Length: 150
Ligand code: RB5
Image (cartoon, rainbow, N blue to C red):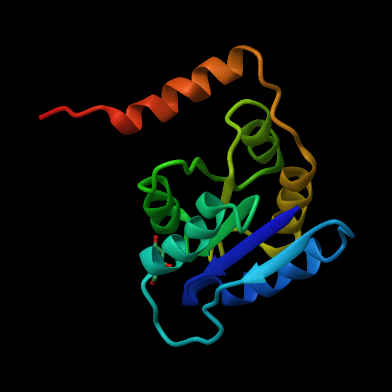
């Protein structure tokens, strides 16, 4: 599985920890699109880089990180084809895969500790989409991208 990861300045440390967890998986290949320092960057730019890889097929899934995980998950979900799940616990991470087929995981470097984040990532990487009735609902989510309300 190819995973592209990115963070803003609010989660650079967490990004390094998450990469170490991903390296536990022999079949996971990681691409890091930055940022790499403490200088302030804009999280929508990072979301775009990660999600572009997912949509183009360069990555199977993405992981996006910012201070809270909120801004970068909102940005990621603006991109057609992305289903980003902001997770702060293992149960949500598992359900985001089983029921929502989340192709992007978002977390907050200032809210989720390194230990819990590692468990979230392990669960999220290993869990498959259940399909069935959930596929119908995911299809409806994706159809919302085509709706115009004005
Ligand atoms: C950056 O200071 C901060 O706003 C960002 O990391 C994130 O928390 C936004 O949602």
